[in-house]
Amino acid sequence: FRLIKDKVDRFVIDDNLFVNVIKLNLENTENIGFCQVLLNNDTFNLYKKSIKKGSEKSKNGKVFFEFNLKDSYYVSYKDDFLPVDTRNELISIFPDKKTVIKDYYKSYRNLLKSDNDTFLKLLLKRLYEINKSNTI
Image (cartoon, rainbow, N blue to C red; front, side, top):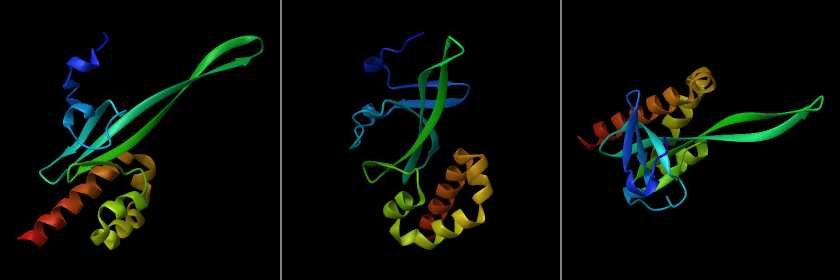
């Protein structure tokens, strides 16, 4: 099936929520489209955008297509939509949590390599918990 993007705000596939980021009325979301919601709390949200790029290859007189999957991660924070694909991007969003972020990247390097979704979810949950404990 094909979605009529202008008419769809959100949908669910296998208990995974996907939202049309353009409909969230956040800044810098003009060409993002639909993203999977990985983490949702009252301070920030974590989104994952998956893009499959195809390239045409030829070998031995045969033509075939090869598809590569690339994931990009975004955080909506303070009415802004920011990429968080690198450690430095996270630090620029949360500069007061720089040591926590760096320590987390060092401690969970294997998780980062094996499961980037879980790594970012756990890191942002940790930042959320620290933020909540500091406001109490």
